Length: 100
Image (cartoon, rainbow, N blue to C red; front, side, top):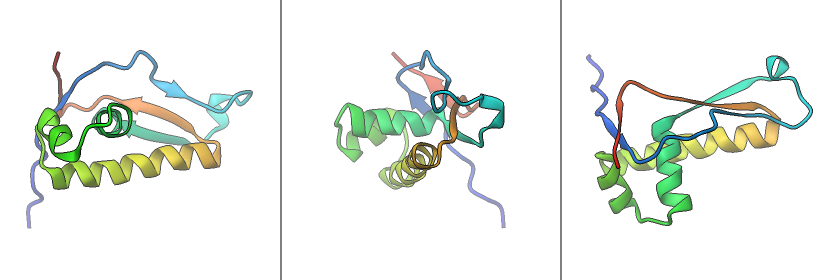
């Protein structure tokens, strides 16, 4: 069975910082959690901008169901990095486009 092809997601910003780590720790010795830019965009729209799922999904060009799954994954990654002292790295995926 073929897996469903991922749709392009619209990203409304470009983060200036691509890596976060615990203070006083060398980055090379830390476990890394990779957060995709579409996951960060979902967090930004829902948790920072305070938009509802419907509007956030429309802005990203995805379904509400996809947005919901993306949020669950993104929140788990961020909490894992914070609670377990891991480095959090933001990665850009080829399935995203920037919008103004």
